[in-house]
Image: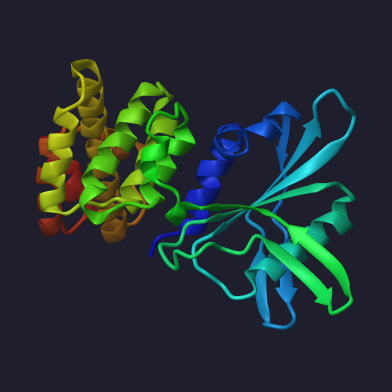
Length: 293
């Protein structure tokens, strides 16, 4: 199963400023970027449903030019839940009570359905009196068109296009465009791997789609095409390395760093051969002997 919570939290926390800039650029006009601190998650029990919930991401940030702070709460929601708006208010009330700071609440909905517009407020109203109107920001990915983000020089855009409104026939094109945008950003390898892994998780292609994916890459300008191909090759090789190491650990338990380094030095063809040879290995010595040949 896909760990949506981990994927979105890792993406948004790594590229927090870029996330805010992409969807809420006005917030950057009063947020001091160097002040961002992520707080521990909060846990509370919903007594009406008997379920325990954990908040996703809470950042404490400073107002520009002021000795005052506020919180940005980002909640990633992968499924449509009834009364979710009430839960958002409960989060807000808990944070406001505990920290005594203003809270800027954001929800990013990543589910594929339903497509109808999600709630973005929670109200308590009587026939003669409105007691409460609580509002929060909503990013509903299945209502956003990926084409609107093609020219955004933003790593979060290159990742989240993979979860936006996509016609099934456009899946290979979207994946190619995600990688095209990614290689133009010139990020460090770890951050590129984070985004490419995110994209690959949500846009895993079948064989015919892979052929179309390659065709899409061939339409890029020569420098971009070469960068995408180089990155894709490296990305696929890294995936092979990770798979082989997982197989080895599953069969023999933990392996020492020296063996891991030798495995990481293999080329793609050698990794394929090792993956097949593993089926016949009985002991870790068989692996050591194979690597030493």
